[in-house]
Length: 212
Ligand code: Z5A
Image 1 (cartoon, helix red, strand yellow):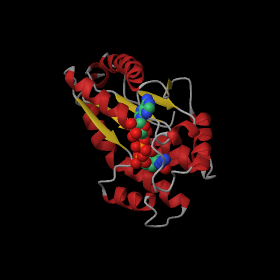
Image 2 (tube, rainbow, N blue to C red):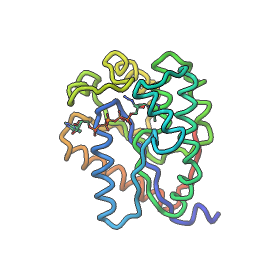
Image 3 (cartoon, protein in one colour):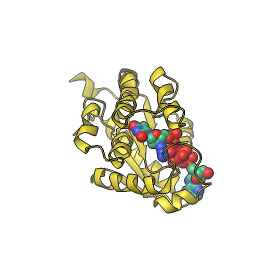
Image 4 (cartoon, rainbow, N blue to C red):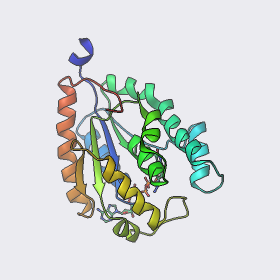
């Protein structure tokens, strides 16, 4: 099969609580890989630039109200509207570093009390990450980092529930990195697992779909 023989990019996903350091690490990883000559892009969800993304942004900023199920489906739709571009990029050899993905969708909505099975259903058929890195920090420690802003989910009690949801979602394939280490130490650990994953994809690991 030609697809598995050709060299493709890796789908790398960073997950974790608010303030765990995803943005910091995505930026550093992107810069490093680019300097090494890899074809790489930095993505994030929600992608607030699309029409759906603007509805999500307004909801997160408390400027609009939506039923919990409706906002869940919008977050999912925001990934679906990027799915074909994502596949195209990966197949053409570009590695994508993605800040939050389907796991955020399921973790945040199930933390509100929605059924996990219901939450995963709209994610079925999206591309499965080749690597999920969880930046592990307690909700209390995360809150100490510069404090929360005014966005809807930036509250200690809710973040505690989200941490519980992530714990239920994690499987043995996830790489967990202690997010309380120094920025440089996390960066070093992240590079190792990412380069390893990129090599596996380069050697012909086929793309697969959620939800395994
Ligand atoms: N959401 C959802 O409900 N459903 C979905 O499907 C998706 C998302 C995709 C989007 O937030 C919200 O939408 C999010 C989940 C929900 N809500 N929450 N909570 P966002 O993407 O706009 O925001 P965020 O992901 O929470 O990002 P953030 O607040 O910017 O956090 P971060 O990217 O993980 O952290 P950071 O900006 O890199 O670092 C935070 C601070 O810590 C900063 O001052 C850094 O300098 C500092 N930092 C970073 N690393 C370290 C270390 N190692 N030591 C000390 N200090 C550090």
